[in-house]
Image (cartoon, rainbow, N blue to C red):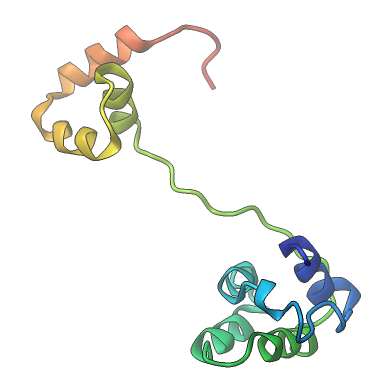
Amino acid sequence: MPELKDILKSINITKDGDLIDDYNKSDYPPFVVNRCFSYYPDTILHANEMNMRSDLDKKLQYKYLLNAVRKKSRFSPWLKYKLPEEIQLIKDYYGLSTAKAKEALPLLSKDDLKNIKQILDKGGIKK
């Protein structure tokens, strides 16, 4: 059973076409692979092409990317959503969930948020 890093390495660097075959093609995650390739300008069109043809067999999608993507080392971390500072302050101070903190934000004034920030300040070196 190949892992995602092995699949991406075979498409990007080694060009090993024997990694996905008829027996383990169910282990190939097309959405995740296409998302990984959507971060690069030279592979975004190939990822979009596979997204448009999601009804294709997984082995065919793998073979297309294997032969269409040029050999190159590619790495980028996943983009992650970062909560606004005010929401995080409300969550920490009141012990609320993210959804409840978003609802409570309009109820608090700027002075309230400033006081909460001072109370939760732990000191240390600021970046």
